[in-house]
Structures are given as C-alpha cells and as structure tokens.
Length: 500
Ligand code: NAD
Image (cartoon, rainbow, N blue to C red; front, side, top):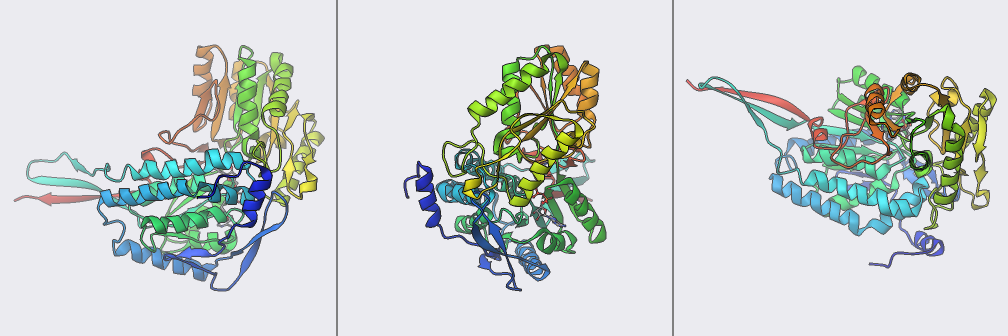
C-alpha cells in the first residue's frame, strides 16, 4: 500500500495517477450506457474535467432491474445463511477501509469536500455503517404470535425485492451506506443511483462489493442524470421500493412516480432549515462553536445544517461576533486537497452562483452581512464561498425560509421563549434543531415544543449509528440508521398453520 500523502502537492500527484472508473455497474460488471451517452463531471475544486460519466437511460435501468430481480428470485443472496451474509458484508466494510485513500481522494475531487474530512469522516463512517448492519445479519428474528394451542401463526419478516436507492451529492458515501447496509442485510437486491455530481466513489464501492463476495446482480450502480436514470427507476413497475435522500421538490416526485406506477414503497429524507435556538443564559462560546461548525462544516452542504440562528435579542451582538471568530480561527477555507483546509469547494459553479444569489437576496430583504459574503480562491478555478453570516433577519425572509445549502447562516432575534418555539416551527421543514441554554427546564420545554427529527441540547450534530435519522413535516418520513432502518426494507408475512 502506498504511504498516505501529507501535503497538497503530494495529493495532487496522487490524483494525476488515479484511474477513474466512469461506467455504470450492472450485474457484476462495469458497462457503458447502452446509448453510449456520457455527461461531463467538472471537478469543483479547480474547474477541470474529471470524467465523462455513463448517462444511463430507461434501457439501462431495465437491464439493472432485470439483473436485480433475477438475483432476488433465485435466492443467491437472500437465501444465503445469515452468517455467510455477515462475513461478506464485514469483508465489504474491511475493503472500504483498506481503500480509504483512493476513495477519499475521489470524493474530494468529485464533490469538493476537504481531503481531511473525507479521510476522517466520510470513508470511515461508510465502512462503519456497512459493518453495523453486517453484524445484524445473524441477529434478526421472526416472531410467533399468541394463538390457541391448535394453531401456530408465524410472522416472518421478508425482504421486499428490488430496492432503488436514489441519493444526493453532499455525503455520497455515508448516505449510500445508510441505505445499502440495511437493504442488503434484509436480503434485498439494491440499485444505487448516485447524484450526477457524485458518481465516482459509488463506482468504487461496486468493485469492492464484488471483491467482498456480494453476488452479481445484488448490488448495482446506475449513473446518470436525475431525469434520465432517476425517473425511470422511480416509475419502474418491477422496483419494490425507492429509498430516497435529496431535495423536498424531488422527494415529492418520488411519491408521484409511485402513484403513477406500481405503488412502490417510498422512504424520503429531504431538505431542512434547522433552527439553532440560543437563550440569553446559554454558554455563548459553546453555542458559537456548535453553530459555526453546524453550518460551515462541509461548506454548509448538509441537510440538517443549523442554518437558522434564533437568538435572544440581549445576546445577539455577542453571539454573532463569536460565530464569526470561530469560523475565522477554527474553520479555514482552502483548496480541497490541502490537508489544512476545513472548508472546501461547493459542488458546482451553478450551485455557487445560487448561494451567492441568496446572499444578494438577503441583503435586498434587509439582512446585514456581518461576515463573509464573497467567492474566494478564484485563482484555483474552483467554486469556493467564504463562511457568511446574515444578521438582522426576519423569519419570514426568503433566506430564512428557503434551503440555501451553502455556508450561509441567518440570524433572527427573539424576545421570549414562546416566540422562539413559534419561530423554530415556522418552516416547512423539521429535520434537526438545537437548543442552547443553562436552564434544563427551558431545555425540556423547547426540545418538546420544536418539531424536528432530532433536537440537540447544548450540542449540535452528535450522533451515531444507533440513533434513527430523519425528519418531520416536509423533511420527509422514514428513518435511516439504527436497527429500526432494517424494518423498512422488509415486509411481514403471516404463515398460519392449524393442527387438527
Ligand atoms: P436532488 O433532489 O436534486 O437530487 C437527489 C437525487 O435525485 C439525485 O440522485 C438526482 O439525480 C435525483 N433526481 C433529481 N431529479 C430527479 C427526477 N426528476 N427524477 C428522479 N430522480 C431525480 O438533491 P441534491 O441536490 O442531490 O441534494 C441536496 C438536497 O438533498 C438538499 O435538499 C438536502 O437537504 C437534501 N438532503 C437530505 C438529507 C436527509 O437525510 N434528510 C441528507 C442529505 C441531503
């Protein structure tokens, strides 16, 4: 194994030597799209062409679904002894760890995240998640219902069949693993459809899954644009479930596709505009650190990013100054392959322009730019925007209601606890929230009153695989992570036997 590079230059050299796979992975082999079509992937870190990716269309989706269906029906995976499934999935996790440098580098080049985080968070979390579900393989039981002595009613938990996992670009590996792990351990065949901005690491996962022993057809990766590859998956008559993470807008399309086709199951993890509620008695330094990391980590491209600060008016000025200071000192923005960078490039030029556009919209609505606000590192050719604080906002403003999905936090003052709860819930979303206070009674009232899938108290974004993750309201329904996630990839069947 090569030594891990320690400098930006060494990572750049390693990048030049990479062999990039850009074809889809169907039935155990890399294949181009049947049409021969590709689309360009431009690296957000420097604006150069990274790969020409297979643009799968309906014919490729038919091919992937047929392979997945055949593998499911002949039982090559679902009928494998649980302990064998466990061994294979554990090997899959181990191979992800062995190939960490290659995968992290691809992830950084493809989606712009800083190499340090790809190495410390994205790849290890992906491997840990596969391992978590691998370990469940031989611990899943069926049930026997209470009946009279002359009957036996067994409730069997059976896999659904063909599961399509349609995922976004912000945490391509972690979110894919949240779906692949439980869907595979339940015995399903899986078709992973990465976002068109983030195909490369998923294609490595396909190679490693095969190397680990996952049989052909059981794990497929179809690359392509949302409309060419995602839509036919959503509408396919032989897909049993779509497990989706992405925007609320496209999540709603998944529900329509299901209704227009075979009523396939749909699980949705969608957008967010998570409030960070800071009471007057909060430890402001801790709150500022939680808020700054909670919005600027991964360039703000996080579904549950704490993008809306609701702060008691008496501490607003002090808090804003502290958030700006934490961002400056602890979260330096820099070239994504520089190991010292903590914030990297936004996913693509169009998205960067959208984020900058929101800063303009905020100012025109009356917000005050307290820090940041500009594109930086233009000389790299990449798409970098500095950490930005929009102060003096009202919750009704577009910048406080719409998901910006970049390093932009809005600050809205309040005067009473009741007002804080009302503002926190004044959003279509309900993914995450945090409450910062030294009064535990207030913490209890606020965390009970705020509608969100996770409410953190005096911290932000602490989590592990054992806790379910997902949203209320238009942040979606269905939960990823934890043992409960396996249930959504299974159906229950009653087998009732009478003894005469
Ligand atoms: P997106 O909705 O644009 O795309 C998500 C996936 O859907 C991609 O694979 C895309 O190709 C596909 N898609 C797009 N249009 C489609 C169509 N018409 N038919 C079928 N498939 C289609 O989202 P994105 O821009 O990739 O990701 C950002 C969004 O994801 C944000 O809104 C973010 O909040 C959300 N997100 C949510 C969570 C969560 O767990 N709740 C986690 C991460 C990201």
